[in-house]
Image (cartoon, rainbow, N blue to C red; front, top):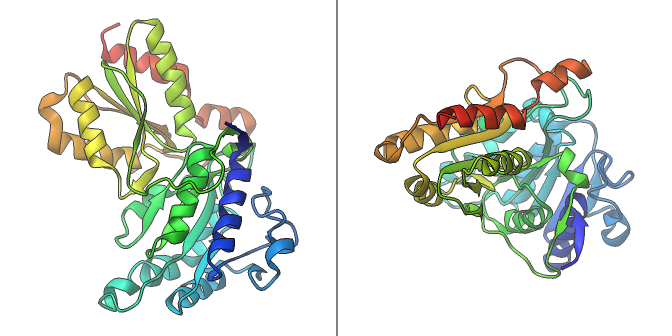
Length: 325
């Protein structure tokens, strides 16, 4: 199978959906003139024109507000936020309008729009351009949240998000843009709400998503050297998350570790841990383990940023303690 990058996969998904449905259009800062700061919109303006690939003023409020209105009027906008961190500027439009309109109108209107949100640590991008904020939106009813970890799901989830009649926030990790992987050609959809067991094992379940999957694979390799077979579950979707797959895996392995780049306090791992504790605690042979960033702003200093990042070897060491190694 051919290999393309994560960024190319999202570009391909967008182009395919725009050719398929004339209601799909993209708006954001520098996406037509520049092709997006990560190249994820490169060439779209040349094919579809500036009526469908629209450069906007530097106003997240305007971008989201216009998208909500367009979606209610029957269009299917894809709004680019440049950096996920900037979504805070448009929070009223996101959580009071976009998320609630379908409910408040009794289903008489839908809001079929996608918010693309590049997130995660970059090289010394500092506190305002490096955050992982997915947990904010897990607490807001009315929004779906996806976070692919590889090019195939990057394409499949974006296509599914664009076709969904509900607002979807599409978190795309900045470091993953250059990662290459196998992606089927042509029509390819990844279902929203369905996790994937990417590695089977019998001794511990490791759950992650997005960039955290890189750590999950490394940790599993280290554990395997000690004779511990880890099962890895890629959530892919955070809202709604796949409760059935999580429970099936935990009941099989009897141990659980959750890894994500976002801060540990109040993160997605806390929700999953609580769900498992409420529904499968009798299957656990050891405490649930959560791994995330420390509860501090992301530092600019390269040495401090390195200390802030997840450390796969340390995670594996802590898990081994859980096994009394």
